[in-house]
Image 1 (cartoon, one colour):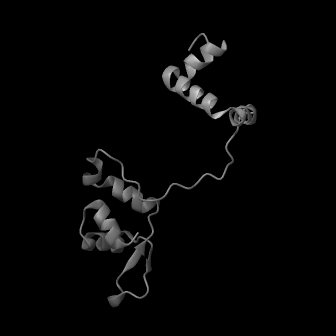
Image 2 (cartoon, rainbow, N blue to C red; image 1 turned 180 degrees about the vertical axis):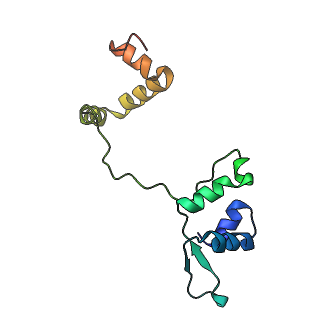
Image 3 (tube, rainbow, N blue to C red; image 1 turned 90 degrees about the horizontal axis):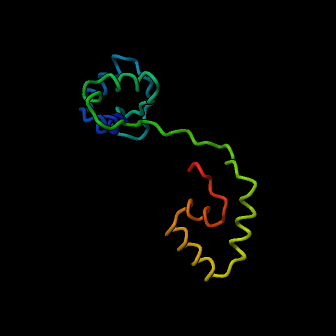
Length: 124
């Protein structure tokens, strides 16, 4: 994040963020092409997050601010063995049959649907 983005997120002055960078030794990188050469990227690492969490203004907040992106999961989702068969059956249904099934599911939910098929879990 830039120092300006971080200051806006925290509701602090840019000068305060710049002071923390100097005092805490946070890792930054210069942004080329900005007049004055003072624009910097701040790496939001564990030290920065811990400092932000310790701020009184952040401890009093109801919501949690997330200052970094959650790493994406590249694992393939587990597909139940029955999924291709269900998809095949739905694809072979006529449009009126699909509409009727949709209304049934909206009206009765999955438990009602399973009860009608006679395969409902009795404990549910």
